Length: 437
Image (cartoon, rainbow, N blue to C red; front, side):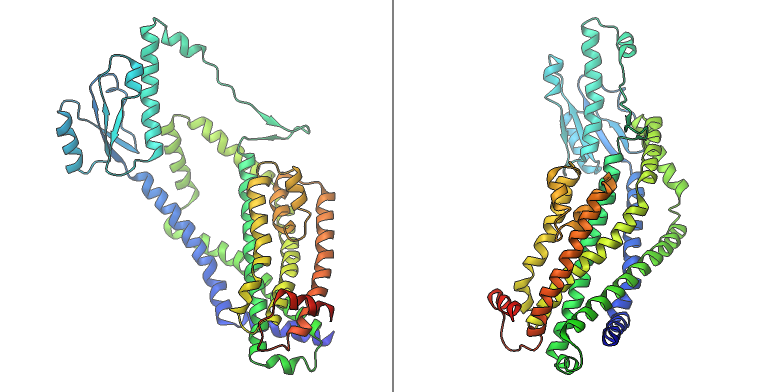
């Protein structure tokens, strides 16, 4: 046991003192915060940029409908010849030209409207233009049929379905999306951590084996103790780095928000501008409030605890495989042939999470893959925000722990043979033989 403690301590100190570890510990949260701040700043900058769109309306029906907003400035070129209007748009480098030809019927007109632009126009802008013209043509059709528009508008009914579970708790329509975002982010982040720290274990084994240091160490330490020491030492370094990321990320985010002025009032102001343009300010305000309530209703404590449990479980499961591969090969290049069995279950778990869990978190596919040890750390973590019975979580963890014990024992048999093998590329057949020794 004393040897195991020494190995764990040595591996932890070696990881923490590594220059790459130190640099990435401080640089990673700074990069993430910088990217988020850049995206927010670019979104705000893009929101302030008004696009200039010219329109050529031969019908005269839509002239009063094109009103300037913070996002679009309309220019009426209906008094010019069409070719002159096109040339003017090109010379002045406007966003585009909307051409509305004169037709015999509204049905013909609806299919003949064109938008001229050098580049593909923004989909949201096209949708706004189509909605404006669709409303006008609809009203014009009503008028031609002698229908009273005021009566029709008053007769319209807006249905807003309220969502509530059988225990009286209300949720919003955004609830599923919020759960999907939180679960998906947690599952993807977990997969990346497993790959990163698992590779650390494998590189450590390969480095000591290639330098022949392992021959000296193995003379006084059992192979299983050495393997477990590397896995535990790296795991403690990973947890330590993760905690530092959370702390430094919070500090960097606060500092950058203060420097760039990306505070809540500014964001709220942007939201109000957007909602005012869309004409549904009160509805979107209510939706945002309900979304915030849904975020606070999420099992955050359970999600964080589950993340650490499944990170440790998934890390031990895959790190034992990484350690066995590191012991079996002489260099990192030779290890590539064994990477597919490791990466494939992780990728499968991500695909199952995004295509099955999000669509039906309590379905058969999602439930089965949240129990299979190789995929359960990711899939179960993506299911938890949707609410999972406690007994399913317990079964998943028990199966995961049992698989960890079995795989560590199996990897240990490969490790103790492969750690002293040099000069030959092992095959899957030889690995099976090593398990029997």
